Length: 557
Image (tube, rainbow, N blue to C red):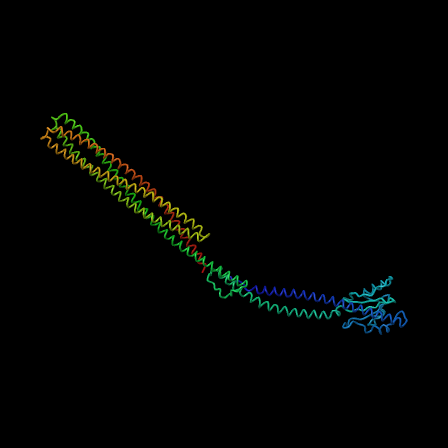
C-alpha cells in the first residue's frame, strides 16, 4: 500500500505560518490599541485646551459687548473657523441653559433643541442648580461615535467642541491598513520560506522513511548512501537505524545458518536412527541364533545326562561282577564273557558320550562366534549412540545461541541426549551379558575338553580291560589281581562319571543362563527400537521445524 509522504513540510509551514500570524496579530493589536489610546488622549487633551481657550475668548466677548448673551454673528466671529487641525468633522456649537442651540456651523440648527444625550445631561444638571466642570467625553450620535469637550460659561451657556471618532483615528486606521498589508506580505514570504525550508528539512526524513520501509519489507541490504550521516538528529537516527539493520542482518544470517545446521543434523539423525534400527534387527537375528544354539546345546546335554546314567548303571554292574569274580573264580570264564559284552557296550557308550561332548563343544564354539558378532554390533550401536550424543550436544549449543527462538529445539536436543545416554547404558548391560556368555562358553569348552580327555583315558582303560578279558582264559590264575585292578578302574570311572555329571549340570545352568540372557536382550532390543523410533520422530519434527524456519527467513533478503 502506497503511503503519502512529505506531510512534515506542510506541518512546518503551518506551524511557521501560525507563529507568524499569531505574533504579528498580537503585535498589531497591541500597537493599534496603544496608538488609539494615545490618539484618544491627545484628541481629548487638545479638545480640553481648545474648549478652555475659546471659553475664555467667549467670556471676554461677553464682557467686551457688555451683554449676557452673544448673537449668532458674534459667536460666528469667534468660533466659525474653530476646529481640530486635520480633522474636518470637528466643529464648535453653543447651547443655552435650556438646551436650545445658540450657535452651530449649520445655521439651520440654531434655535432647535440639542439632540445628544451628553449635552442634555449637562442641561439637566444646570437646571438642577449644579455647575458642571469643564471636561471631555464620548457619546454616540446617529450611530457615529464622537468625542466632545465642553465648558459651562458664566451665563450658563454650554460651549461644546466635537469631532467624529473615525476622523480622529483616520491616521491610525491608515497605519493599521498599511500594517495589515505588510503583515500579509510577511505571511506570504514566511509561507514560501517555510515551504522550502520544510522541504529541505523533510527530504532526509522522507528518504529515511523509505529506507525503514525497505527494512520492514525484509531488505537487509538497503542503500544508505542517499542519506548524509550528519551530526543532527536526523543523521543520528539514520546512523542508529543503519547499525540496527546491520545487527539485524547478522542475526538473520546466524538464524539462517542455524536452520541449515538443524536441517543437516536432522537428516544425519534420521540416517543414524535408520542405521541403529537396522543394527537392532541384526542383533535380534543374532539373539535368535543364540537362542537356537542354546536349545540345541540343552538337547545335547540331555543326551549326555542319559549316557551318563547308562554309564553309571554299567559301572554298578561291573562292580558287582568284580565282586562275583572275587567270590567265584571258578565261574570267571562265564562271567568274563558276560563282562566282555558289557565292556563292549560301555565302549559304545563312551563313544556316544565322546560324540555328544564334541557336539556340545562345537555348539559352544558356534555360540561364542554368534556372541562375538553380537558384540561387534553392540560396538557399532555404541558408536552410533556416541555420535547421537555429540549431535544432541551441538544442537543444544546452537539452540542456546539462538536464545528464545531455540528454546523448543533445546528441549528436543536434551531429550535426544537423554535417549542416547539410556542407549549407552543399555548397551553396557548387553556387553556385560555378552562377556558373561563368553566366559560361560569358555568354561563349557574347558569342561568339554576335560570330559573328552577323561573319556579317552576311559577308552584306553576299557581297551585294556577287553585285552585282559581276552587273556582271561589263559591267565585265570591272575583273575583276582586283575579283578582288584578292575575294581580300582571302576572307582576311577565312578569319579569321572561324577565329574562328567557335574560338568553336565554346569552346562545345563549355562544353557538356562543363555535362555534368560536372550530374553533380556530381546526385551532390551525392543526397548531400544522404541527409543530409536522416538528419535526418528523427533528428527522428523526437527527437520520440519528447520524447513519452517527457512521459509520464514526467506522474508529477509
